[in-house]
Length: 70
Image (cartoon, rainbow, N blue to C red; front, side, top):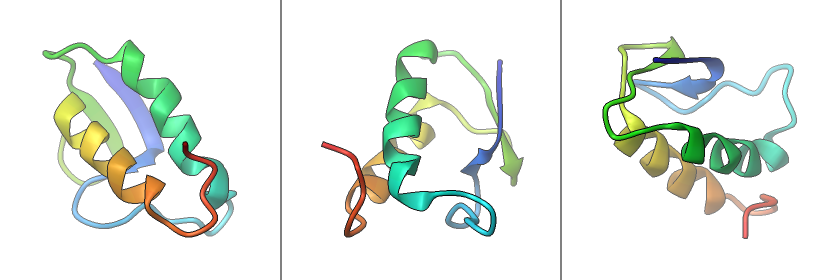
């Protein structure tokens, strides 16, 4: 189990009120190697998700203009 708080959000995009969103994709990418196929991920909001969801969220964030993702 990984408790990621507001780094993940099921049911909608992450909220960036007090965050630096341009580095968010890189941070999510750094999290991914720590997640196994059976890892349950507890986001800051929404239902418990899995590593596949986190990977999809990373892909979505990496497409944002100005993101630091490669």
